[in-house]
Length: 124
Image: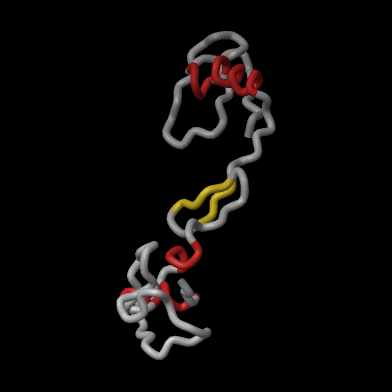
């Protein structure tokens, strides 16, 4: 069977391994088909670029949030160091890591300094 490249977009294409189309079941002779008609489904051109190219490309360690590409933050601390911060920082414990006195949290608090022993939060 001689199937042309344009057969996949033809209205008469059979989508069958046994015949090419309804008009020319065995395919056409040569490289042109006189009976070609663009299928209505093939004529629709999608507006979205994803319909043409598939998934949006994104670099490693990044992802899309809506239309914006967001890069994952660089991790400067090792896993052990991050776990230490979770175990000791007043943001997570509510206590001073030096003297264990409670530190009162306020809305929008950035610095977690201890008024009792003078410990200063220098993480920011």
